[in-house]
Length: 355
Ligand SMILES: [Fe+2]
Ligand SMILES: [Fe+2]
Image (tube, rainbow, N blue to C red; front, side, top):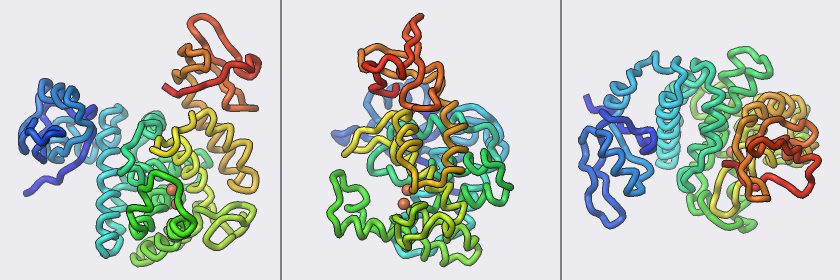
């Protein structure tokens, strides 16, 4: 049986994994041939050569980490990262199939959703994954996986039943699937879109709805959430201009995850905001845009995960976030060695960078 190939980051590589491609450096010289079993030295070499991602065979990945179906219930970051990269790879394949004119297959999206919803206590890893720098050309795939996991977390924080948790996860995973029908030059364009390009980009919601409706097994509420994830509470969103009372709960949850992931992501044309700034913007400028109940559930829980983060201050010093300020998440209390600084009081000092 031929084993599937998975693209994983070199940081997640472990001795015993087998290469599923010939790896070359930027001059075309071979570093490692296909079907070579990695050892510590080979992994070190890949890192030294600046290689970030390689393709490995799935069977070698599973044997190394001792993973089978049960692997999903382990709680170490390594298992999470391998699964995360697999999910990114799967959504990339889904996009490729749809671009090639194939129909969406719910069996495949179910596999991803299943593995996400059975994995407990992964919030810490999700937060770390969302904060990773992403390759620009792969941005959309990582974004879909992140939005799926964040939507699942919000649904749980809101105490929704498991069937709703699944629907939110699935809608998050597929919310931007319509982008598979938008020209790639528009999707990956580094600069600002022209008006007509932006109009085309906006059509991804409708394209996504049509793609989802091709598989009758997809829940109509999930398809509707894909169509309406850019609607706003005050009716100023697209494509239908629906007001909050007409937008389903799944779409409201996906909208919050979508905005958070997009705003914290590192992209070529805009340096990412720190998560603290993003929380502050979401709290203070989302009136009429995001649903307040969903947003509060998100902010109440998500901000906890950023206590303990390391940041660089405008003074150049490195600090640790020790206490969140609920009135303004961009101004937490931080600790620099043994000094505590309340950024809400020390007005001249701000957070410059998330480390
Ligand atoms: Fe979207
Ligand atoms: Fe999105």
